[in-house]
Every structure is written in C-alpha cells, then in structure tokens.
Amino acid sequence: MNRKKILESVFSVLYRHFGHLDWWIDVDPFEVCVGVILTQGTNWRNVEISILNLKEKGFLNPQKIAFLDEDTLSELIKPSGFFKVKAKRLKNFVQFLMSEYDGDMDKMALEETHVLREKLLAIKGIGKESADSILLYGLNKPSMVVDEYTRRTLARIGLIKGNEDYDEIKEFLEKNLGRSVQMYRVFHALIVELAKTYCKKKDPLCTSCPLSKGYCKFYANLLQKNLQSF
DNA sequence: TGCCAGGCCGGGT
DNA sequence: ACCCGGCATGGC
Image (cartoon, rainbow, N blue to C red; front, side):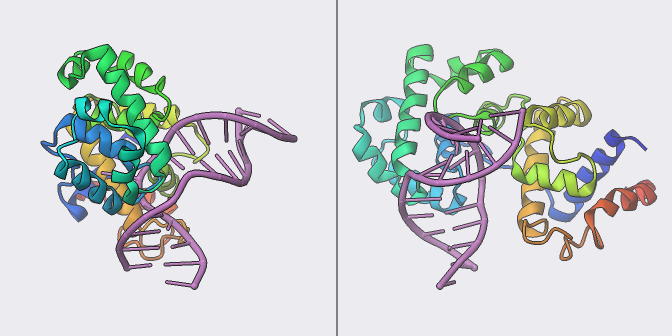
C-alpha cells in the first residue's frame, strides 16, 4: 500500500464524513487576498467583521485601499487583530498589485503559477501559506496550501513524519492528489475541518476522532483494511 | 478564565 | 538551520 492510495482514501473518508467543503466560492479574488492576509494567526470570525467594515465603507477594492492612510485602514481592520502590521501588509500587497498589474486581479491571474508565487513571496507580509491561499482560493490555480493543521494531521495519520518543511509537504500532496484545483481546495478545507474538530493540539491521541478509533497512526491501517469499501 | 485562532518577520543562537 | 518574541482582538 503506497502513500498515494492512503491519501486518496483519507480524502474519501473525510469527504464522506464532512461533505463537500470549500472556501471563498465565487468570492471576488481581491476580497480573498484581503481575507488571506487578515486571517493570519486569527480566527476567521474576527476577519469577517473587518471585511464587513471595509465593505460598508466601499473600501474593499485595490484603488481605495491604495489611497487610504494606514491609520484609517488599521482602524477598520482592528477586529481581526495585529491590525498595525496587517494594515502595512495590505498596503504592501495592494502596492504590488497596482504597480505590476494596474490593480487588476485578472491581469495578475495571467501570470504562470510558479512565477506569481515567487513574486507574492517577495512581498513583506506574504509567506508561503498566504501565497498559496491566494493562488488556490483567489485565482483557482493548482497550488496546494499547507498549514499547521495539515502537518499535524498528516503526521498523526502516519503519512509524514511531521518535521518536513513546507515545500516538501506541498509537493507530496500535489504529486499524490493529482493536479486538480478542485481537489486541492476541498482537501485543504476538509483537513482544516478535521483538525479543528478532532485533531487538536491538546489531544495528541485524537481520542475524540470518530475516524481514527484511537491513535491516528492506526488510521492508515484502518484505511488499508477497509479500502475496498471506499 | 485562559487559551487559541485558516501566519509572518526579524533577531538571536 | 532552528527557535522565539512580538504583533492584538474576540469567542468559547
């Protein structure tokens, strides 16, 4: 049994359990970018308040944010925390978008995925997870998102050791999930849902996880045994 | 009540 | 190459 089969089975089980989960469906790509930056280290609920603030003022577009002073901006995004650094990060991103693509997300979307990823990573405040989230959920490009949940969950299942770096895990997933944007989007959302619900930091044995029936390392074995039923 | 949330950067070892 | 503090609000 190879890791690809197991990974496919994991997806299958999660999909059956949680259903079709996806994020930012049909959301304006620029709004996705703002959301991605605001949600760094922060609960999504808090981000929604900030997004609403920006929308109410009609500021949720590149041009407006570009000409907004940083203090006003940080005031509007206060609910999502780290508001001063995030105001700066939003400014950095918007400045990039304006200067490289005339503030046009459609133009940005024309870039080749890997090229754009490197450009995004060069922006202060955009790390790997944010860059990949923008690519995947904002622009529908095949760039898998990895986060702490993904690392922890895959490690507990036994698919990775857990000490691999970001890009290693990303490549593992991209190689074994196939290059389907839809698959990446849903898989990441499913993993996050699983981790938030059952695969918590404080519960290393995953005792509450209905999928694992005990320690998650045995999850892989469970899948192998029952593979034919998936 | 304390802990954590859909991270990232910069400086120190 | 890792490790850590700082950044900050709101919900359970």
